[in-house]
Image (cartoon, helix red, strand yellow):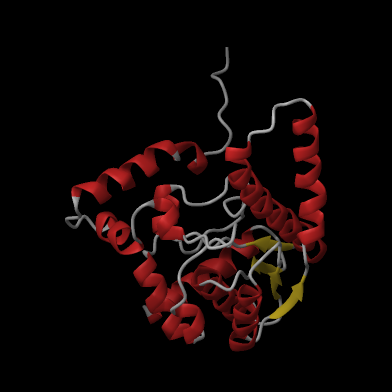
Length: 246
């Protein structure tokens, strides 16, 4: 894994050079995946890397964990609170749709969460443009395969260094990089609403997804869930669809 880390650092440096960019930026959520990417870009660009902490109606514990990652990696960072921005944007959407009787309360929670993810990505690109940095994503192999990311939110990035690594491998990488134990062992969550966890929302566990991706046997129920998630999220792994040239 040390060799894999060295190759990832070299790859990040190569891609930034190819893009004529100056460095790299990542959103630090307080979770293990963003923590690993934070350490990777700090290694790749010691003086030209940046982390953004972007609370948005978030659990305060997430910001505390994000600051632990900042301290462990030594990366420069900003904290940009998006709570009021989100309330203004999504609140206006709700008001307009309620006025026409089209508001769907059942779908509102997902829309609210996806809007937070897209606001964070908009913020990352606004700051990235200022420094001429590339935006580095945090999706691992399990998230990418199942589509457990927001299209044009946390999935809307320039580089995805962890996309071929299982959740277990990301954990191994985190320990070698010096990610704080509190972050390594916390329950994975996208922080999109109170009490939300990745595994509860997906209906299976990262351990099962990792086994499936490795070609190992998993219970039929988990296999069905994983394959259903993969099929329905296929559009997320492609650019916008275009018709053939007529």
